[in-house]
Length: 260
Image 1 (cartoon, one colour):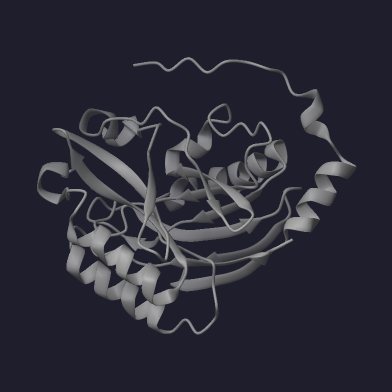
Image 2 (image 1 turned 180 degrees about the horizontal axis):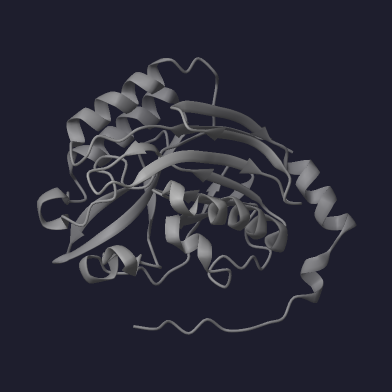
């Protein structure tokens, strides 16, 4: 049973400056000597949480996705994070999961943060996306999605819930609580990558990027500073826990009806 070696890159973001952000993340990655399976970057890691989609969006063959492919190949590890993408005259907060062979899958953020008018700028996703890495199934999730347990519901189809975010300090207690709740109720690891620093809208971010296990135990966390969290997830421990405590057998069944 293969374990999963991950790195969560908690970083500052340069507001709406793609080139500076890509260079900044590349400097972080240069220092990684460990062999990894997965490297995790924050939500909108090339821009910050921008509503200026018209000026900041890239196409599906844009420089940022090309950079992600280059890095995944270079580090021989999957790379994930979200970008502002324009496709078919729509804008998306799109989370990419790029493999070392430069193939990729993507998930469009479902729950758009109306307090920042994200729902007026971007088109919501409608499809839950679970990707495979080694013998692991990973559910892709972006920031505000974390507040909605129905969307994250595990019907024994994933092992890890992966959330990338720009989650501000003023609501960080909710973040800490929700990542543990999603882990407990779904009997899955949660990997949560948040940014640090400030943006021009006076939002302050202090990270709290975390690794939480299937029982809700906090295994690793970084607060306040730029830092890379390294951790190895144990698949056999997860399976043993689910077999010992098969809470999923008593779940209620329901159907998700997508609202407009």
